Amino acid sequence: MREKIVAGNWKMNTNWPEAKELVSGILSQENRISCSLIIFPPYTYLQKISDLLSNSKVKVGAQNCSEHEKGAFTGEVSSSMLKSIGMSHCLIGHSERREYFNESDEQLLLKIKNCLNNNITPIFCCGEKLAERENNSHFEVIKNQVSKVLFQLNEDDFKKIIIAYEPVWAIGTGKTATAEQAQEIHHYIRTLIKEKYSEDISNQISILYGGSCKPSNAKELFAQADIDGGLIGGASLIANDFIQIAESF
Ligand code: PGA
Image (cartoon, rainbow, N blue to C red; front, side, top):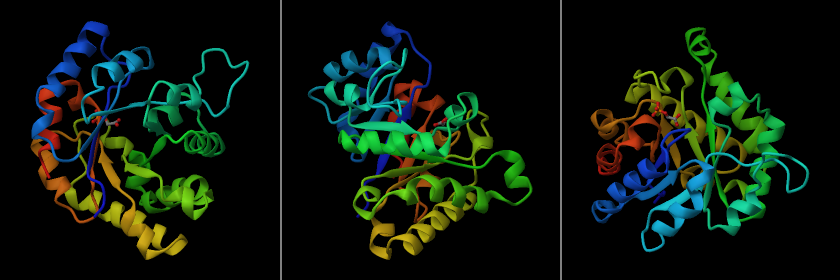
């Protein structure tokens, strides 16, 4: 049985009072949830939120980390720093970081290795842009993203990864991939894993869908054979919506 996960990527949203309120909204309803819940608040509140959640099953992760271990990299945060305040997960290669911060495959691989060295589970994001879907190169794009980064890992490391398929055209646009479109890519990713590693491993890896996932469409998406949950942006900022999505399995 693969781990079912609903993860909330808060991005650069909330101030501290809003963040606290969001956390207490989630906390007050978490007993209804049977899947794993992970939230990704901004760096500034990670430690405080992790303290608020110390008796909860909700896990906390970071939205990014440096590809460097430590040193003179002003403004950066390392994975060992994140581990030292109890972070369990880290998002790697979100399309916004690839696009606005020019993160390369080489950097993403280093970030993943640093996370794994510090026992932080990376959630690796991949997904095609609208033009790439329209010119039918989406399979090729996904294959490249996964092969150039994840498939550089040895089997033992690869087994520790979570993948999120997030079509860029569906992120923050209100345009969700249909359940069929999402399932098709999730199945494709699983096939690539099977070819590179093994069928066993391909059946163990959780693959989340992200991109305008909300209470109204989560059920249909999560019912697909190869979709193991969601990486939620906008809807994760509303506690009731986030919880409702987590109840959609
Ligand atoms: P969205 O974002 O749910 O607001 O589309 C998803 C994401 O970027 O992870």
